[in-house]
Structures are given as structure tokens and as C-alpha cells.
Length: 166
Ligand code: RP5
Image 1 (cartoon, rainbow, N blue to C red):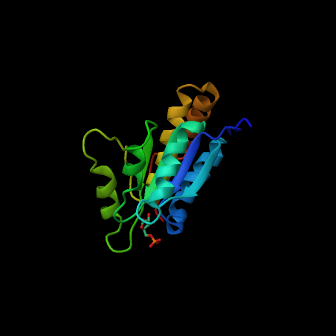
Image 2 (image 1 turned 90 degrees about the vertical axis):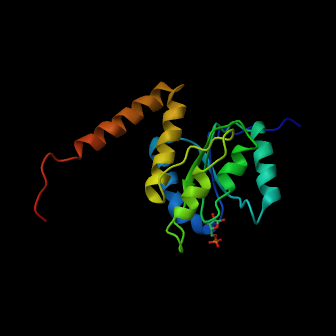
């Protein structure tokens, strides 16, 4: 039987259910642009075989970009990046003990040879990873490029020239 390949373009993965409250911002941003995505929990440490199988199966999908969020000893983005040629965008989750500095350094300090573009800690990073994924897809999608321009123009209009007293 022929396998059905879905049209999902972006994969959001996270190390734990507890990461979802941050990555829901990624989801909301992708929803705004009406880009298809999937979301999965895959822990580099607690479910290593799930990680390996996920990364190896990517070639059987239409996924173009992976957004990977993890906290603490955040090895998920780097491990996935080592198993695929697709872009893997890393989102450091704000951890309880070190406020996400541990997550940030774990994700950003990759050895040369395996690339993980890394975003800000927490919500800003979750939103910006989605925007970067959109801008990558927009390279070959004029409608999406147009939506991104409108999004940026609207944002510019929200910025007042002078501050108000509160
Ligand atoms: C990491 O450990 C996850 O990405 C999460 O940010 C962190 C804590 O996980 P839980 O203990 O909340 O499941 O693997």
C-alpha cells in the first residue's frame, strides 16, 4: 500500500509537556499565518529511541523546518540537528533554577559542524522561531511573503512616536 504523505511543513517538538506553555506561542504565530504544523513531545534523555525514530522518519514527510524547544540540559535541538539536514531552530525554555540560561547555553553552544540557530529564552524566542520558519518558507511562497510583510507593517504602525504618562 502507498504511504500517504501529509502536507505538514513545520514540526514543533519539545522535551516535555511542561514546555508547551512556552511553545503554544509558536503555535499561535503559525496559526496566524495559516501554515500547517504538527506538535510532538520528544525527550532527548527520557525517550531517546523516539527521538531517533522521529528524526529518521523526517525523510518520509513534507516537513521543511523543525522548531525544537527544550529546557535545562537542552540537548533535543542539537541531537535532532545531528540526524537531519533540515533546519532546526532552537528555543530555550525558561527553567526554574537558572531562568533558562542553562537552556540557552546548552542549545547555542554547539560544536562547529552541527548548526542550531538559537532564539531568545521563552516566549519571545518561541514567537521569533515561528517567524523565522515563516520567512524561510516565504522564500518559495509569494503569498506567505506578502502576509509576512503585512504582519511587519502592522507591527510598525503600533509603535507610537512619543511616550504617554501612565
Ligand atoms: C527538559 O527538561 C524539558 O525540555 C523541560 O524543559 C525540562 C523539565 O522537564 P519536566 O521535568 O518539566 O518534564 O527535558
